[in-house]
Amino acid sequence: MTQRLGELGTALREWRGRLAPGDVGFPPGSLRRAKGLRREELALLAGISVDYVVRLEQGRANPSQQVVGALAAALRLTGAERDHLFALAGLGRPTSGRSAARLTPSLQRLLDQLRGVPVGVFDAGWTLTTWNRLYAALFGDPASLSDRERNVVWAHYAGLPTRVRSDPALTAMFEEVTAAGLRSAAARFPADVQLRTLLDELRGFPRFAEVWDARRVGEHVAHSKIVDHPEIGPVQVDCDVLEVPASDLRLVAYTTPDDDVAERLRLLEAVGAGTLS
Image (cartoon, rainbow, N blue to C red; front, top):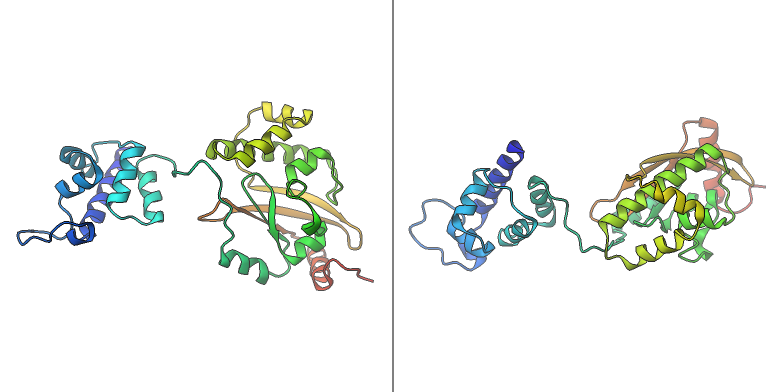
């Protein structure tokens, strides 16, 4: 903790030093011995005492979330800098309590340009929001499905038709990691009405309720599954889950170490969801 608070103090001093008084409405003055804001000015902007600013910059105080937010606003920090300040204070990144699934232009380009790898993008509740051509070709085109039907957890417990093979060990792993991920999401986004509604519906399935009551917490990072495709046969893929920065989306990439399977996926991509004959 001592090292972290020391880094917090250093960051505050550096960020205070880069702001010109005129940037925040103070007169420049002629007797300033150093660039940047005075501690008294930062204290006034943040609504805290000068003594507290001194203790923070010396690494001798552990600020609350409210104080860190006030300092971030006073110092005109960027979003990334604000998140870093909260981390240095030992606090989680502040959120509105609601998930925000923002598909950035760069992520859309990644989906459009990635070749040979099925990719799906999911929100915090594991609803598929967008996908690339090969994802649709491998799993079936989800374009005609409702939002609820595109939620992979709800679809699993509702018994919707799927090309994913029902392997007991892999199924149990899927159920555990998705329930754990949903519990983490519920804690991160307590004000998300859509997520709460989804969880209420899922708890109506006895098997989900059983897994949920085990109270595991974590994130869905990696998984494996076997897809029985009607034309290229069984395809075993590893699923890697990547968090998308600055959004509450997850990108899931499906890859295979088998060269023969990879070649069949490339052939499938070439013809899309249509027939291979």
